[in-house]
Image (tube, rainbow, N blue to C red; front, side, top):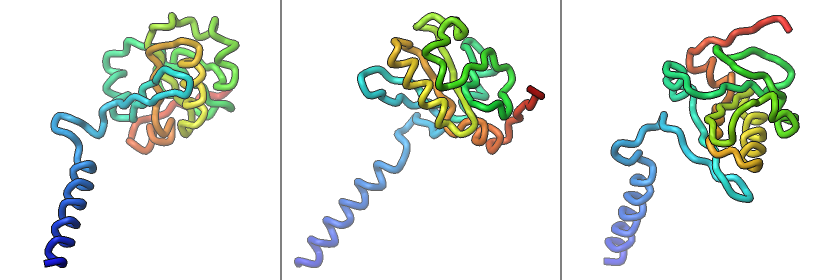
Length: 147
C-alpha cells in the first residue's frame, strides 16, 4: 500500500509538471511576452516570427542598437548605440507612449536599451529576443551596408 501511495503521488507530481509545460489553449509559442524591469515597468519580448508578422503592418519605430554595425533588419528607422540611448532621446524622436522595437546582434544590447527606455518612462518598448542572429536563424534576411 505504501508503494501505491508513493506511485500515486509521483503520478500527480508528473501531471502537474507536464501541465506547466503545455501551452494554455489559445496560447502560442510565438506570442510576445511581458518582461518586468527592476524598479517598475515592463517591456515586451518578441521572437523573429512575431516581428516578421508585425513588419507586414508596420506601425512602430524599429531601432538597431548594436555597436559596431553588423547589419540591419529592413526597414530599420534609427541606429542608436545601446549605451547612448538615454542621451539620444532626441534622435529616437518617439513619444513615451509610441511603440519602439529594439534589436541588436544577440539580444544583450537591446535588452539593456529596453530596460533603459522603460526606466525613462517609455511604456510600449519591445525587444527582439535573440537579435539578428535569431532573425537570420529563422530564415529572414539581414541587409549589410558598408559603413
